[in-house]
Image (tube, rainbow, N blue to C red; front, side, top):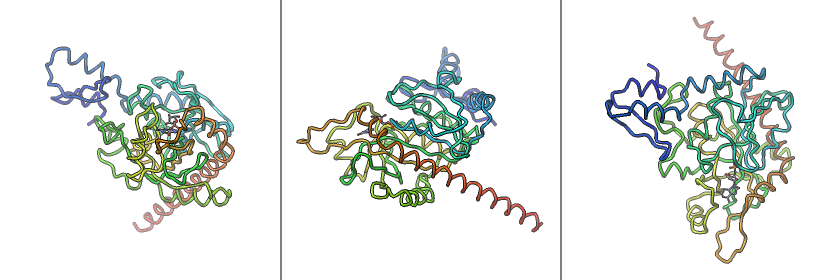
Length: 346
Ligand SMILES: O=P(O)(O)O[C@H]1O[C@H](CO)[C@@H](O)[C@H]1O
Ligand SMILES: Nc1nc2[nH]cnc2c(=O)[nH]1
């Protein structure tokens, strides 16, 4: 049986309707006046598997490169995509059904190309909840990437440094997150589950791949940048305002090291789809937790820190992509050996 939202709604005696206003689903009994029209209108806001497949096919028809690694560029980090060769760029507004990027420092385009010969696809600009998009819409490109063949994802963001030792310009490898929006009942995986991507309930303790984190630490040593590479916990808030002092003090007592307004919805969607994930924050500003401190964070500073760290981040991401490609080749040949030995067993 198909499990996409529209066929589910059509086959269920109770029907689920999505409200774009509250970003929530509600159930109605069949026979409610105007229900079919309401369902059609509301569900047209939800991407079915088939619609996502059609977006992936649209892209595949226009580009020869078949990437297995995806990269999401955070605020001020879009230049990571400039390193790509054999580039093929699609502004979001030309891709069918894609939202538009509205934030300064997010170019708003999908870039296919090669990094030192490895095929990759880059989101040069992402979607945030505060732009007015529900989380499932913000993370839709991850599912499109999956359907194109991406199974490893590098997620980057700019974040405020809450940990007392963190300085602007530090790089924090994400080992975990606190999903504050999820605490409040807002999650990109809400609604009818699409089993073709992943199961209804997912464990999160291994979402941030340990092996990839270890490789990133090793690469940081090789690059001589280990003195400003940290490992920590990121918390997501809805934004667009930066945090109050009281909020930051609360988060600090909860073990949060860095604060941002993105990434978690993408990680949830990617992990649900079985992707291997490496994520890091560029600490773009300090978080003020002292009422006597007059410093005020601003978005321009966030972007400037990204520019300042551009060369080293490009190098880190390039080396991680090469490592991820190597790991994938190793696991592909291990699988071939496994299936060959199975053939002998029989
Ligand atoms: O998380 P990214 O997209 O890097 O951007 C971060 O920077 C912006 C605030 O300056 C917010 O969008 C925050 O989430
Ligand atoms: N929420 C939040 N997001 C950010 N993005 C960059 N800096 C910050 C910050 O201090 N707080």
